[in-house]
Image (tube, rainbow, N blue to C red; front, side, top):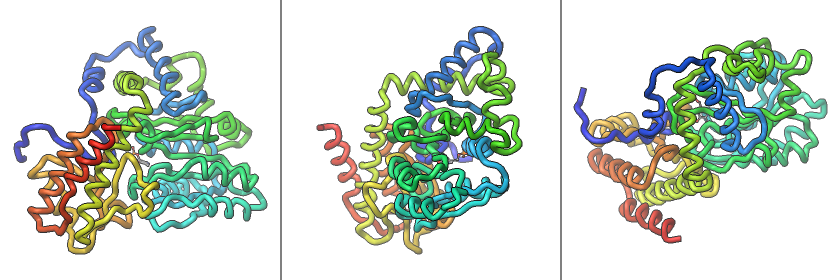
Length: 399
Ligand SMILES: *Cc1c(COP(=O)(O)O)cnc(C)c1O
């Protein structure tokens, strides 16, 4: 293995950099998990996670990745044979739909070109056409990590309301939580699904379901949801007073130690400041890519500027550009990891993550290393990308 000195730059859209503070908070012996200290810590975390979702509702925490949290949400509200509407956004809407199909749910997809956000009018049209009220839910990905596009949740909420439809609004906010504004209660979201390893800066290992009263009523109605146990919001007594039940078994203590630190860090920074930081770093990245793009070999995937995600930029490349080779040279020579293309963009795009615990020099270093790699490989790119990123950051800080 190559010896690499200095810091490793992890610019992938998950997992993201884990701050030293979180690592240190986790570096301790196990606690007695039903003892008063851990019970108090868990109680605090279950409450203090709510403001991150901007909700007063219950947030369930699972020892799982995002896929687990997806399944938790689906199995609590959907039974085999139920129908849901899925506006396609990219690989993540697709993978989530596949999971629902494996659980016996019927999926109706609203197709997309992977270059635009969800079109709320199309959602409304489909719901209006559903006279029998068959759709149990609309499953939407807020920030689609494959395409680098964020869709508007309030617009989809309005579409459901305008159609007078009763479907639950279920949102995957795994790649947007703590990166981009999200307001569960104000926006009328029924279930919000999160994960620990993106904007929350923790290791992979916690999945979240923030759940409205309406969704909980669906789940606890007779015959509501699918046969389930670990994922169940109610019957395994995740909401009962006995702390040992909150995690349906031994609590993922060390993840909770990390989460406690992450929540403190977000409160210290302020959520709005964290959103502004992501927007600033996203703007700098986009300014650089636009300059590179003038040579015709690459472009930002998201066609509409205001739909571009603050946490991830997906860059489409033309045929002469070998993504695997590019990632390898960048990794081997610069200690920088970026994401490859996913799904229909595999081999056709790379992705620069700017989510979680990152700052200006990390983005500038990443952009400079990416450009050096273009030069090593002879990949055509326009000039002035770094000056554009620098100017963008300076302008943001002068304000
Ligand atoms: C990362 C991600 C997931 C999947 O999370 P895992 O922890 O890998 O299961 C789901 N949805 C979105 C939008 C993501 O970015």
